[in-house]
Amino acid sequence: MAKQIKQIDIQLTTQKKEKPQQDKLGFGVHFSDHMFIMNYAADKGWHEPRIVPYQPIVLDPAAKVFHYGQTIFEGLKAFKTSDGRVLLFRPERNFARLNRSNERLGIPAIDEELALEALKALIAVDQDWIPTEAGYSLYIRPFVIATQPALGVDASTHYQFIIILSPVGNYYPEGVNPVKIYVENQYVRAVRGGIGAAKTAGNYAASLKAQETAKEKGYSQVLWLDGVHQKYIEEVGSMNVFFKINGTVYTPALSGSILDGITRSSIIQLLRHWGIPVEESVISIEDLFAAAKNGELEEAFGTGTAAVISPIGELNWQDEQVRINGGVTGEISGKLYDTLTGIQRGIIPDPFDWMIEVEI
Ligand code: COI
Image (cartoon, rainbow, N blue to C red; front, side, top):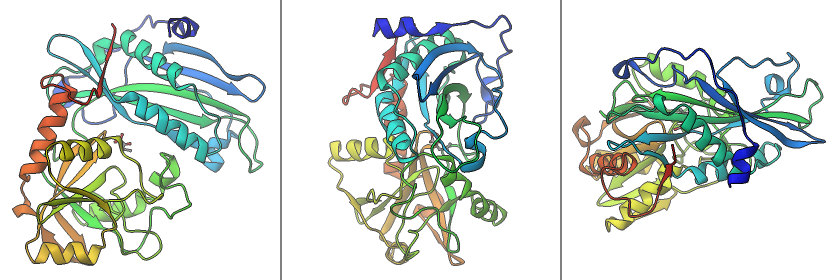
């Protein structure tokens, strides 16, 4: 470990930015003073890991990322406890998933231990950027881009791996209040065998048009159905989804076209720890609406790094609306939010050893 840290060259900025006011952070609009960057060349492998002042990157207009979307990303968070400790939530899972996304996109694997050491070193340098209040955190965005300037459709010979840090508040303007979700009927996000399970830009680009239309209709996000039958529930794009029906919590099984969410798997673990039955299964939109109409759908919520736990108060499918739990936050959703954020902020015990302390 120590040997790897020494490989990382650190160049500190001479011009620190003014920090934004915590209650005005929003999501992903402010960035810290430094970033981590490492290059890949086919003949050298990953090399030159370094921390440098946050700055624009210069790329050739022919860089493959611009033309063929060969790029992947991750999202995770750091928290500062009231006694000044810095905690990361399950970062090793993010770097393992980053390499699964790399694999799918034909990008060479990154040394996961080095990536974690680089992140810890970057956080230590920019520790003043970690918000301290409840509801705020330091969002971490690692990503890889294909940089080879060439228009042939094949995997790039050159890449950059970059980590940037952004102090954030809530992802949704609704905060932890229930969001309204529009079930998308026309477009699909992904199909099995495609790239839906990878955290890659194309999945998000494919969602933007439907997202705009949903927003115009007064909905925060789109719920995607499967790409073949447009019948089975997949995910919300920025969140995995859960439904409590007659006392059992259901979430779509990992089908190959939805994201293997780290918050998703943590929530399944928490619910089972509490003795609440959880099933990862195929859920049809017809069955969900039938359950909502006959009063069996007790709660619905989304999970994600950015969104944490986001209760769903209303669903619209084919212009039919159902309200869930009277449009207010359900008991399980509220308890999950309080428990997860409590563990993350170090204010309640962490029975699963999810949190990793960063030495600063
Ligand atoms: C995350 O929760 O980290 C995400 O990736 C969702 C979104 C902001 C793209």
